[in-house]
Length: 200
Ligand code: TMP
Image (cartoon, rainbow, N blue to C red; front, side, top):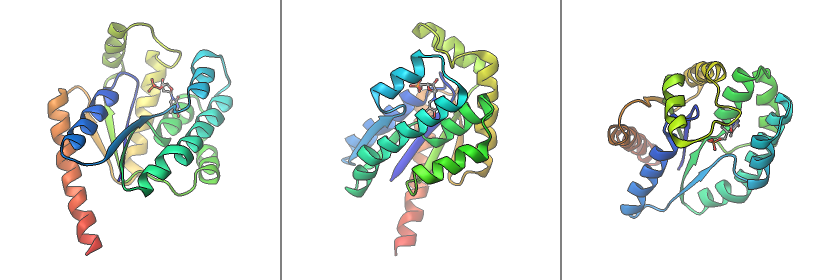
């Protein structure tokens, strides 16, 4: 099963997705946790340089292609549950809604480069950008993506995308972590039941 967590910076998806992995491991389920950007070298280029929106888009998609080929695809084939912190909705929301690259263009390249691997379920952690920025501030420096009006566009983008995306659940990122984990587990248990019924 391929589970993705999405949301703006500071929405809490890393903490929640890690908690889910620990929960599954404790119950004997083979689960790995991974994140995007995946490769250290692409991450370094994108985060620390001034790039055009298209350059960023192509680098994030390249990074995802390597991620799917090297890690996500092989682990799914071996029967692991893969928990991923960000996937393609991040590129659609940040580079599409945030930076103005036409969504159709991004989606077309995506279809060409990364074909069939799709999340079985996506959790979108939604939070007011100013609250997310307060959390980030307490952790240290802001990155180039962590600006209020930019994150507002990205948040709206995520919410818009979630309407069309199948199996995507919006969670209130302002709730406490244990409440959120409970909601994730409830949704997952229903989803797993549906999987089993389909298999019968
Ligand atoms: P992180 O803080 O979640 O590690 O992600 C690094 C930054 O990269 C974050 O600000 C979001 C941004 N990003 C994009 O703009 N597009 C993408 O496709 C991905 C995966 C991340």
